[in-house]
Image 1 (cartoon, chains in turn green, purple):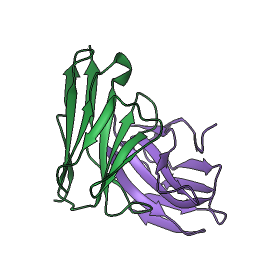
Image 2 (cartoon, helix red, strand yellow; image 1 turned 180 degrees about the vertical axis):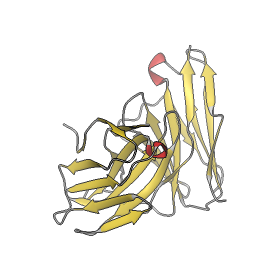
Image 3 (cartoon, rainbow over the protein chains, first blue to last red; image 1 turned 135 degrees about the vertical axis):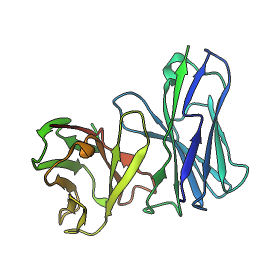
Image 4 (cartoon, rainbow over the protein chains, first blue to last red; image 1 turned 30 degrees about the vertical axis):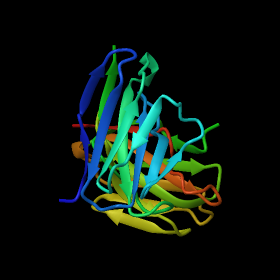
Amino acid sequence: DAMVIQNPRYQVTQFGKPVTLSCSQTLNHNVMYWYQQKSSQAPKLLFHYYDKDFNNEADTPDNFQSRRPNTSFCFLDIRSPGLGDAAMYLCATSRDPGTDTQYFGPGTRLTVL
Amino acid sequence: SQELEQSPQSLIVQEGKNLTINCTSSKTLYGLYWYKQKYGEGLIFLMMLQKGGEEKSHEKITAKLDEKKQQSSLHITASQPSHAGIYLCGAVFTGGGNKLTFGTGTQLKVEL
């Protein structure tokens, strides 16, 4: 089945230690998104790639970076995680931006010690 | 204030009962999406509505978008324990670019 895969499902890191979260997709979609979802809150868009074009949200901290080496993979890098970055990180894909439906992966739960 | 307000915030129903969740927008909706999320997991796409007055159904779940395209409702008929979870509405707003904005969710519990 075509799907969005996130690894790892659970990630524990230390305060200030860089961490990378991974997302891959077999849908061959053009757009890949990263969302941050804190407890009992709505998912918040951090950034997205439309093919190779990176689109950052204005309020996304510089601490968050992303890479998309090819169509299938997208990475979220947190350069110096703080306690406030503990959250669920959700990857989503869509065929095109706009109103095309976004399909989500299972998420990575990040804990910062 | 929130651009998308969901009500109720939480809901407990007995198995077999019907229920409705509402999503109200402060802006005109270009597209409205319903997702379900189980605790600690990703979002599962349920339905997408775009036309005023549109109604879609999947199994026992029906979603409607009002004519003015500023409110949507999600109705579950004869609820089952498998319906339990958090229901999120998401919207792309007219003139708001391509960004999908989410409501804060409705937590549904179904008691046996």
